[in-house]
Length: 537
Picture 1 (tube, rainbow, N blue to C red):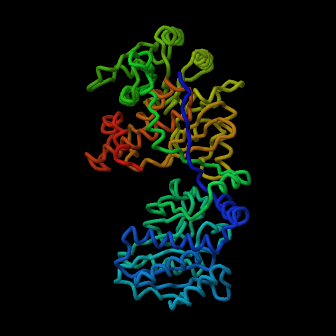
Picture 2 (picture 1 turned 180 degrees about the horizontal axis):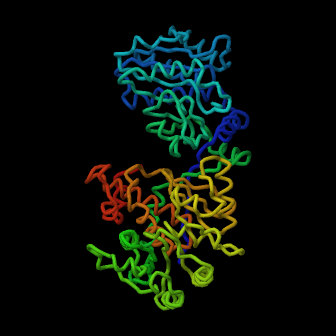
Picture 3 (picture 1 turned 90 degrees about the vertical axis):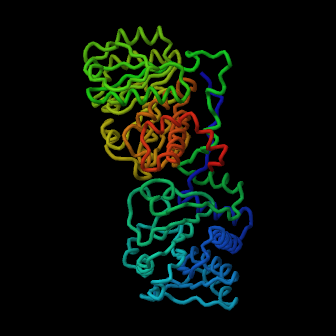
């Protein structure tokens, strides 16, 4: 096995980190707040023009905070281009503007342009205009805990804008009311079609369900120095990271094999799974491993599952009898693992209950001492935590793949989903204590690496075409195939997720996004580098 790989990425800027970057840029690099606001506003205006959002009236809703300052600068640039721009200041009566916003308002007016104070029903005149609406009320500084948003003038303005038919909404940094660190479902009055965020994506712009409020997300470079990021990391390190998908796909471990490589070099994968009527799951896992590059796949099923096996069974798959009826025969298993040079095992696809017991857990770590990896999926994840030995496992070699329903069944320690910062920290520590890589198969997959000091990894390349039966089975086979060649559960998980997501996009070109099935994805698994050639990102 090899470990000559890299896993690099970009942090998701939570609120504290974004504010730290802002402060460090001003104090250490002497880029003033005014300069940064000018850069940000200019980039917003430029991007709106580049997206050809200039053929309708433009409504700019400016808040009283610094996001309003950015939006006033953008409005000024758009006015200078001769576009029809209507600016409204959305501020509560008696509340002062932030000094930076007040300054940009003076500049806007000095250029000869007018900014009106928003009053209720002010936007009714645009009902038939199909306008471009720039939402610049709240940004990264929004604090959802204050609890007054739903009764505010900002809520009224955004709700009024939401009633305009044919509108196109552009959010500045974040859709107003969406907190940068939001992980759970939330209600905001005005969803964005396009969000122009500064510096890097925020957690709420990458993680479902919050990201569904943001539309397309474009990251704008507004002048933050790279060194400022390093300094900010020493102050407050972000919890989440997006690995670079292009780099993951470029690092194909099968490309590194010598020309003389044989099937054992490519990896022998054993898949233990299936139950009556659910024999397709282990077959899909096996075929995914072969499509990824594995050299040999063997499937072991309980007797009742094997007897219900129907349909076109792939001839490339080998079957082995490792069960006594419905129970896994541990002597047969241990002998097979030793004699057939198995490099990775998948346990669970198509199983509604777990085959794990303490005896099985004494065999598997011994096998892993000779190199190899184990993927625990589907029913095999149930109560898995109770079987982990006290000395813990090895996170580079153990990967658990629970979906939300399976997550809460792994043990009492995972009774809640990873949907808050506190839970994210808790489950990263749990993965470290157990010695496993924990891959949460939510709408936005999260990888808890089990390694101290590493961030939680986020996979946001997929879309809802993957929300169909069979996608998880493909993923299990892909992770195992990668584990067979590389001793790294986190890297194997993230490359497998990216390969799956990109294959679904390739499949959608032929059958349409909502027509994609697992078999379509399977057929494209070996073609993902085609998207690199097309400039995927």
